[in-house]
Amino acid sequence: YKAGKRRALAKGERHHKREKKGYGGQKYPLQREFSKTTKKQTLKLKCKVCGYTRHKDGVRLRKLAIV
Picture (cartoon, rainbow, N blue to C red):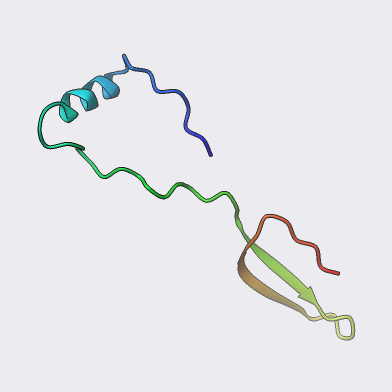
């Protein structure tokens, strides 16, 4: 995820600039960790003998290949 270009003349941007001016620094905490780039996948593991499907959830990965 990449943030878009900020508009300097937007109302919020002007307000933020006013708040930041002088001593005291940032009005609110800066975001240091950014949004996730992957979703948590749910693996469906199916038994070849009885056909029972077992869900293994909460695995975060970009690409999956079960061999």
